Length: 199
Length: 199
Image (cartoon, rainbow over all chains, first blue to last red; front, side, top):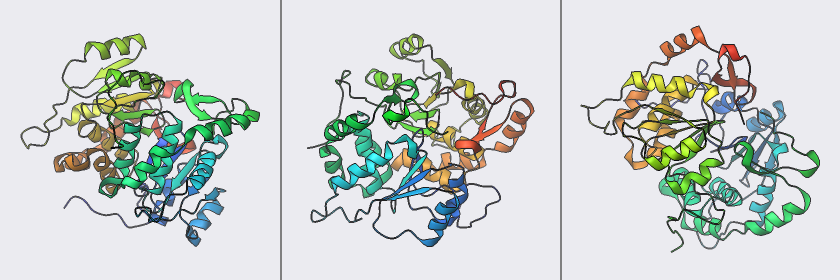
């Protein structure tokens, strides 16, 4: 047996990322729900904010972590059961979350829901559309994190999500393209000019 | 049918990342073998180097891309069939690749093999051990990219890979911890001081 589940909080300097953790882009991270055992790892990210996608209240210990590190918490309550046709993902809420996500003043930012699969996957998928990734690559990334739990409804949501209106809306108040390197496809606030995200 | 495979080279400004593409860390990327249809996307990464883990010669079109963009190609030929006990992953080669990988003078760097699953997964796994990630998180990340093709042999390789000697060896010539943010767990060359990676 070489695969042992780590469930201790102190690991002699060993870092424990939250489940399903990954870097989305420079300054943007994604994961499942952070447990206290992950707080040591999260500290190394120097987060400025967290985008939390569940309707449930944030647990006290996570609240304490966030307060102690001056992290801004943005909560967008999206129901978890989006696999049935009765509950659909609210595109307005995703749009609002996207606006927070692409604002570099909030970076480094961690996006998380419960498992880091569906709600987080939908938000990241819409973000990739804004970055003009082709849809098959967006779906591939979504499925990498959702695994066997992937939902056709989520892919349909991502495909039909309208980024053009968001782009138009953002163009009117803020923008400047920057990219991975110099072609970064991320929006910066106009009034801040070419200020670099904290890193 | 909403999932269509994109196989055209020009996509009207739509970016096509290579299969299994992801950001590992600020300045470090991983993927499967880049096709010409991915070159437009790769340009946005402003790569300084590529770590290529297969023994096969680099195709001419990829060679042309690399030359045209002044990208340094580091090839470490590791056989692909590492699932049988007869062929084991050469830890010396992985160590050499790791030295290139953690040298920020080579960043931004793309690691790739054929599918971005096994050879790339092993190298990234060893890199995570250097970063003091706990083993269960390292395995989780490995499996996220390998999917159902994950190999117990690869996990055993990652677990038994000795990072301590690499650390010792590196400590003697180069180092400085920097991190995600200010705690970046990445080694910098001593003679360059705290020079930031190009971004």
